[in-house]
Image (cartoon, rainbow, N blue to C red):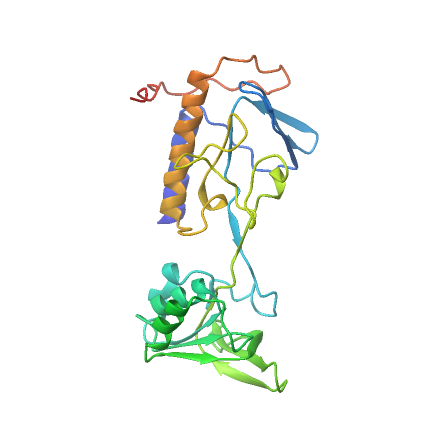
Length: 280
């Protein structure tokens, strides 16, 4: 299972000398020059290093309505690719009006008996081709201009129905379903480095080409913090590997600057390991 595998990954990293600090980083100071020292603050504690990998991810935007958090994982989801198979032959809804919502609906329609796309406007942000693909499927319906007001549990404690409201008439009604997928976008968690590394208009950290290099020397970024498109565990893990290699090569090729004494000393690794092979 996933949690067990994650713990094994963590244990293995620990055997190779990795240290873990489960706390909230409150501030970072990034060096400008190659070989400079970057500092992460956790409250009053300082952690300094020559390289830093940013992997803060991106959070799903939420509706912020009653029942959304309580029924998370019990019918309310933010990823049809992840959870659609749990709703085979069941009635579901998608909340949203962009390309992501259409993609989610099209994928979910392969499993669910019915998919209702709930959107607050009669017009959609989705591209014409994505909208046409969704409209072409018999088990996808559109409900506009409506918003979801509340998610309500059924007798089994899982999602039973949603209360939706017509924005033109203000009329409310109950919409039965067992699965609700929220597809209203993501928010990259880049506030910690805002103004220190380059980000795009949506707040995703910008990297150079296919690498994980940011515009700051010795600072790398990986995972959903840089990914507009895929946002899957396997792609995030793959870019994490890229960032680790990019950081190692940076350390190899950049003149060493002594790390200040303020950085806690690392414990000796419990196992020996061989460095990565040089790049061709």
